[in-house]
Length: 331
Length: 221
Image 1 (tube, rainbow over the protein chains, first blue to last red):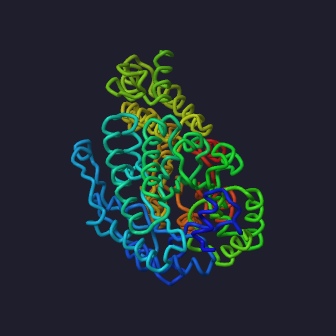
Image 2: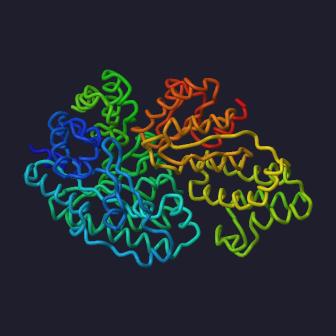
Image 3: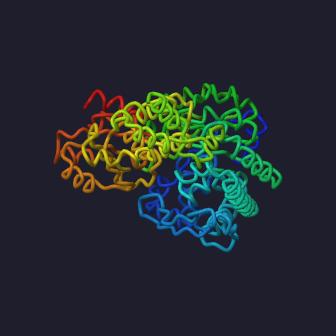
């Protein structure tokens, strides 16, 4: 049975032979093949090679196209600088005032270098893996993208002060997310990850008022295109679990600050929970302790829709033995 | 007088900047922290009283509500904006010495990290609590912290990091400060940071939220 078939069984709630293992790897994966983070983020060939090597070396169950938050921002016009051993930097604030929101045009994802590079990554996975391994594409969620374009502080205050233009900007980010998701699905992605990390910093009312319906729209759109959706909001989302359930994402990433049992109770048996060992613990503790903590989580989620992962990205300095300990604990 | 101070505290708690501000919706068209602060000073309320019984009371309430997840970042930003607007009226009294800051706090997000929201929240809360804040921004190297510390030798230093991958950079900065100015009080914070990590790298204070830092500072300074 292929990894893709195992995943489909999990989606249907059927018994799988093992707990699926899909940690978020970026800088770690780059370092694992001796390449820089900058190369990983800027060249799909490096990203795909790094993920495929990690897939085999750590016996993972999925590969991903996640790299950094600024692919769409770059297509919208932001200047990006790649750093050897750091997350790429966004050097320009595309939205300075309300007039910029009015003028902002949703770019063609095939025409811009950074978005096209991710689409090429999806095609490379398809060609190499022949559909046997679930491929996770990636888009920025609408609020995260709006923050990338305007700045977090400015955007969060804009939400409070200027409802109409906030809606306008979020709609443009939504349109971009849908276009980018479609392109990646057509290139072979089976799942689209939607990263909207900033949502953990807003209250439930604000999430419902500005974000929830847009998340739901993206989920419906991706489902109509035949793919699954993985929602990634790092940080504590305990206060958002109820509205998140209403958007019907297939997979919800659960960071370490959220109690898995409480998340299961709210999100229900149909949702695949993905998480949630603290990445600092995975980095700092010994493999025996990582194994024991992982084993406890795996036992807790046994027989339920669950994918083992860190709460968020695996850090670059995580010992290989600790990632292998997680895998062993999930078998 | 008391009523004016209560208005100021209320406006700051609920993020009402001035009469033009549409936030919060249920206070639309009403006066904000800007107008009430000016009125209080014009009425002869001492600047110190405006700060301690108006602004600080409002920010204290916001800080506690933030800690208890009763408000989130957008609401705190609005409160901070209201506070900063009110503070503009008090600035001349800081300059003249009529109001003395509680101390100086040098804050920055550590090198390699370009996230500033947590750092900004802490800076705003400190200002609202009567501290002089020197904000070095994001991606700040040890040298910059040290240069600023040499110019303000009694200052407390605050290091912020949002990423698990950049929190380790805090250690290098703490080590440099310990080498050159060992008695400096160093506070650290950010989403991935813990008390355990604080102890491990030899920093003095850790708090999971801005209000916690204020309480730590009350004890330590």
